[in-house]
Length: 283
Image (cartoon, rainbow, N blue to C red; front, side):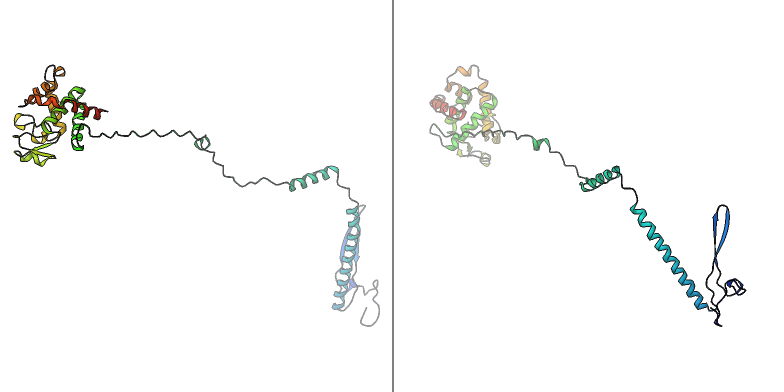
């Protein structure tokens, strides 16, 4: 509409295309059967810019509304009219649903369980019964001897066994010690040195010392050696072994051949007691 109240003639000389303030038209090319037809959409002319913009906006809104209606009208039937899912698709959907419902195996690394050692799984072995400890037989004094005398007799028997001497030699040695020292380790009052070694009595028979009253001056050994019961016994038995046929000699004769005593027959009185002592020690 013009400002003077007259209607614009779209086909007259005052058409919007002849005016410099008209809004440019939008051209659309449509191809049909090889022909090109130009369609011109005219926007309503309005000398006022504000009204022109309003008209253009209103037209654009209408066009958009028509497009939305057309899409809504034609889109819904297309989706409704689409083909139903085939049996294969339905079956695959059921398989997928079942697989999702199943518990999935864990992918976390697992620590291997150590295998039981053979010793842990094997049946326990029957524990062997501990062997009874060998008890040492207690040797008791016999033949009227006390503990000190019996211990000295034991040392004589042990020394003779180490030398491999027979039982008869052991009895002769014990009987000789009974006569010479009453089975006590004697020191000598004449030899003060002898008293510095373990002893159980002191004698005054010259320089005689020890269980067998052997004299250092006669070449039996040193004072220290003769005060040792083991050494003194081995010295006596070594001398006895040198006597020819000593095994068949009477005890007093065999002992006298070694000792050269002033009382040669005195040894025989101790034979039975010496035999009893050796029997107790040897068991």
